[in-house]
Length: 490
Image (cartoon, rainbow, N blue to C red; front, side, top):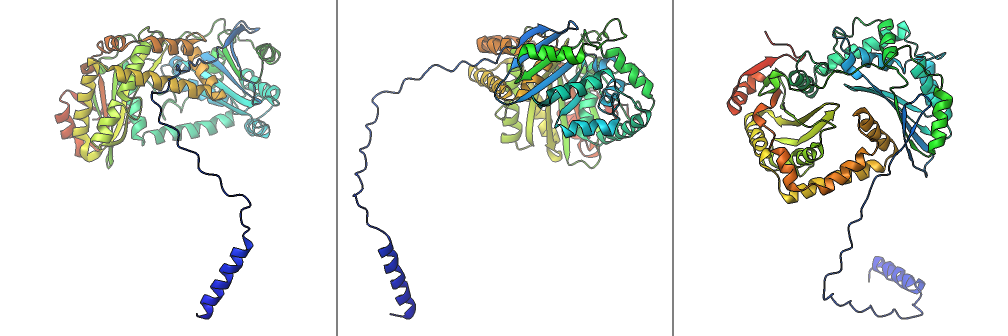
C-alpha cells in the first residue's frame, strides 16, 4: 500500500468513527396507496368577480369611483378629463399633448426643477397621458404622503406655470421626439394607419403628439389657454384605488380641490363619432419606403366595435382568437408554422363612438410576399367563424387578464380610468366578464360574419426597392405610396 493510499484509508476510518450509529432502525417505507377505482370529483369552477367600485359625488358635482384596497399603504388617484388631441386646433396638431406635458414642468411657486425635486423627495409618481379623446392625470403614492401628493396634484391642475424658458426646452425635446418617430417603422405604420383609416381631416387622424412642424408655432400662452379651456372641474371624473376609505377620499378631494374653478362655462365638446371610415380605409393599400430595412412592417386595419356597441364583447372574443394570445391563429400560422416573424397580434381598439381591429406583425424581408398572402388568407377565413374550443380559450384568456389587472392597485385604477374615458359605467369590467361568460360561439360568429376583409386598410412599411413587386403580386390593388410623414411621394 502506497503512502497515499495509507492516508486515504486512515481518513476514511476516522470519518466512519465520527458518524454515530442510528439509535433506532429506520421505519419501513409506507405501502403504496391503491389506485383509485374512480376519477376524483371535480369541484365547481371558482367564480371570480372584480371588486365593484363605489360611486359618489364630489363637491364639484363630478363623480368619484372608489375601490378600497387595504393591506398595502398605497393609493392611486386618476383624474380623467374629456378632450384629448381631438380638440386640437386644425392648424396646431399636438397642442393638447404639449399643453398637458407642461403641467409637470413647474406649478405655483415651484419652477420645473423644484417641482420635480419635491415629487422625488416624497417618492410621488405623477404623470399625464394625452389620448385622442381624453387627458388622464395619474398619481401614485403612499398613504403617508397622500396629503402632500394631492397638494402637488392641485398645483399642477390649478396653477401650471407655462414658463417661457421651460416651454422652449420642452419644445426642443418634443420636436426631436417626433423626428425620431419618423425613423421608427412601427410608429410610421401606426401614424399612417390612423390618418388613412379615418381620413386626413378627421380629428382622430393626426398623431396626438403632433408633428415636428406643428410644434414650432405654439406659444406659452397658446399652451396655457389650451389647458384652461379643458380643465373643467365639473367634467372631471375621479378614480381612487387603495388603502383609503371612500369618505376619506371624498374629503381629501374636497379639502384640496374645493377651490378648483374654471373660466369656461362648459367643458369642450368632443368631435362627432367617425361614422363611415375614410375612402382609403375601404380597400385601401398603402406603401411607405424604409430603405435598407431588414424587416417589413405589415398592418391591417378593419372597422371594429365602439366602447358602447352591444356587440363589442363578442367581437373582442373573436379578435382574441385571431391574434390575442400566443396560441392565436395568426401567431400559430405566421410564427410557428411558417417562421416569417417573431410574433403576430390582433387587437380591438375602441373609444367613444369608434372601434378598429388592428393586425400587427413584422416579417423577415425575404418573406414579405408569402407573409402578406398568408396573412390576408387567414383574415379572409376569420368571418367564417370560430370553434367552441377557441371561444372557450378566448373567454378564459380575458378572465385571466381581468384577474391579473385586479392584482395591481395602479392597473386597476388605470382600467377604471379607461372606462370613464370611454363614457362607460363604473361596473363596466364586471359587465364584460358576465357577458363573456354567457356568450355562445354562435353569438360570436354572427358578429364576425359582418366583417368584410376586402374593405380593410393594408399598410406596408419596408424597403420598396426589394419588396414592391412581391407585395403587389401578393395583394393586387391600387397601391399608393406615402412618405414617413404620411404625405404622397412625388
